[in-house]
Length: 214
Image 1 (cartoon, one colour):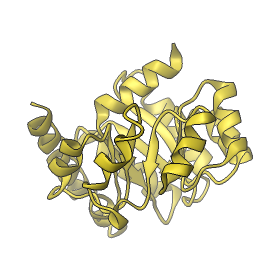
Image 2 (cartoon, rainbow, N blue to C red):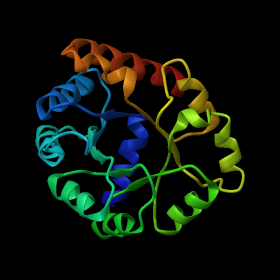
Image 3 (cartoon, helix red, strand yellow):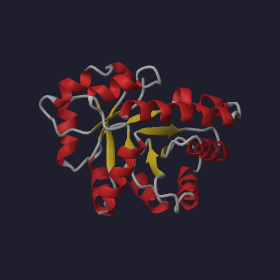
Image 4 (cartoon, rainbow, N blue to C red):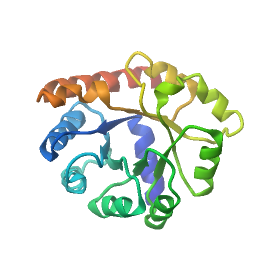
């Protein structure tokens, strides 16, 4: 049941913020600014210093907020996945598919979102229980590729990351994605300490998503 609930939260969130940061403090503030803007999916990447501590802080902070879902990104191996899950991560995202990471996620009943670029990688990931495929980098394909992937695999849940913007959000969802990952333009203001602008951009994404989903 737990896994289904998390997957529902990810689908409801629709737009997942891929949070990077030069420091632990910057990543926490950026995440808070994103949630304040109404965007409730956070993928905290392990490129952030002390990423597991950031995940724990955020998981504690939003434990009573039923719509907020905190996950870990840039997870390269099973050891890191377990560290993230113990810290409170509700989903695990990798830049590529890793069997041992898939097994750990299955063991803890946590959704695994591996980065894949080909049908072969996607079918392998599905065999090991991946629930959502992260199409990465999305910029290498564009929205038109979704139909091609879903023709042989209609049950495929795809989340493109990289190359997703306010301008093409509609195209991605029209093509049939379950959610999208956004980072660059959303997080850029955080690097210069402008967290209010992060909230504003997050709110723009949420408004656009509501418009798309009606």
